[in-house]
Amino acid sequence: MGDEPRFLVIPAAGLGTRMQSVNPEVPKEMLPLGTKPPIQYTVEEGLSAGIQNIIIIISKKKEIIRRYFEDRAFAGELFPDALAQWENIEKKCTITYLYQQEPKGESDAISYARDIVNAHSLAIHYPDNIYSPAPGALKRLKSVYEYYREDVAALMEVKEQYAAGIGNSGRVDLTPVRDNVYRIERFHPKGQGHFVPRFKGELRTCGIAISGPHIFDYIERACASIAEAEFTDVPVRSLMLKEKGLLGVRLPGMVFDVGNPDGYKLCLKYIRDYGKDKRV
Image (cartoon, rainbow, N blue to C red):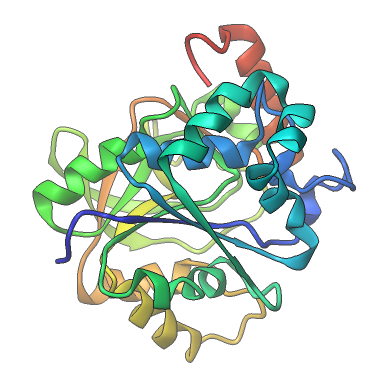
């Protein structure tokens, strides 16, 4: 297994069609979420884990993300209350932008980072998965990754009051290892509707993980064996699971899927109810 993760890869080139009913003009990564946009939460997760090399995969239609992090005046105009945190990001990390040529899914987007990441380990964080209390998810995964030297993925419990905002995906079979660490035994196919737990306390994976550089080989191999137009991470993780194994780390907080209208609204309500000083 490789070194500690030196890069954070953020796949943010997707079409985001589910969120067009919220605002058809603004990408989901740049919608207001408290005092800042979701993409900023994601970058701050990397910084909290000591990762200073950020790679954001975007498309030509999402230049607003790049402008936000490169133009202080523009950032201050959009999110004035987040400017101090924005300045901290500017001082402490380097952001590289890569452009996905076609909307072929998140695994295809992640593959663009291969030449930069090279032989190093990497964190992957989908920008529509927002952890609370933030930041802290990647830091927790990093400690488990460095202890076990195995790829790790975040696990979350879907609370009943937030289930309507979580899609029916990420379902896995688990075997406990110790404390909040589990061995993932199987990934289940994505289903329709929202996530309905099979039993009380069921955990699901979410879009936060740390992998060795071998993930790029698995992406290449999985891509050759699928017929779907959208190349998700399920076939990649399933192949890795079969050959290398994969650990899951239960996060003590909540992960919101702000990439769909229901999840976005629930996260906004959560912020209003609990306050930015305590949670997201």
